Length: 94
Image (cartoon, rainbow, N blue to C red):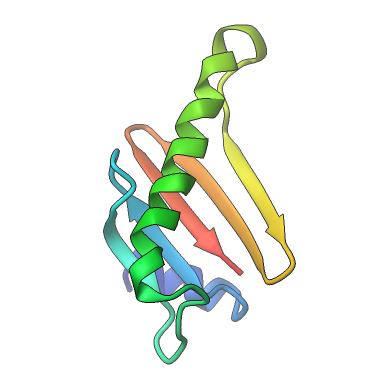
């Protein structure tokens, strides 16, 4: 069972699980099978980059506040968890 499959099995509300590279591109993972993305395809890459940049920007305060472990984004139609492990950034969406 892949990490993505384990995450999807953990909670049926998770729509997306992926690992992003430093440029905000999806390196692995993706949408839950059978579900469509909330954003149009032509906007998806730009939104993924924004998520990656927001995570990186939080690192500016690290020397003073400690490292950022994860960020939760709560919107009307979306809850996202962005976090970082060693060198990779991950994103999960409900």
